[in-house]
Length: 151
Image (cartoon, rainbow, N blue to C red; front, side, top):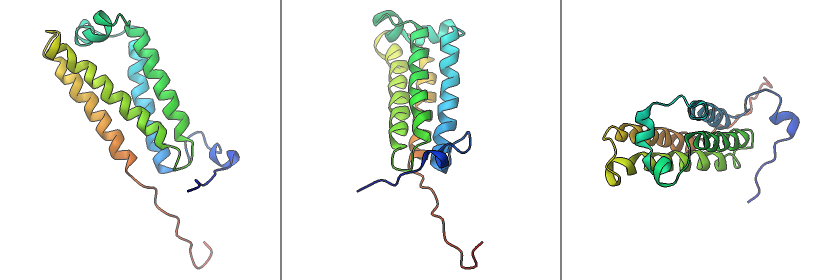
């Protein structure tokens, strides 16, 4: 099955994606990237650091590196949002997979590492983001119906 091709002058005519699915992916990538910028700037509380004990203490990954990882995934999803309907699925998969993996990191601390119990709230918020990404990924663009009178 061949995927339809969108010419570059049509795809990048506006600064935002031309399809509804692409626009939703673009907005979700911007929202998640804001969280990544917060991690990159180091503007996190000690409660977030305690909730992410798996990454910070066990795997020795600083939160700034986590912020860069979030920004890389969001940049990939933002690039995929400009692709045609068949190719934006890679951005949706990357963003959903990352949010579910990040939720798992929040879940490991209270369950296995005797971390704070409020890390469950972070887990639930990232699961909500991942669920919303999957919900938007299942939405189809409306088909353009040709009009009889040429409008």
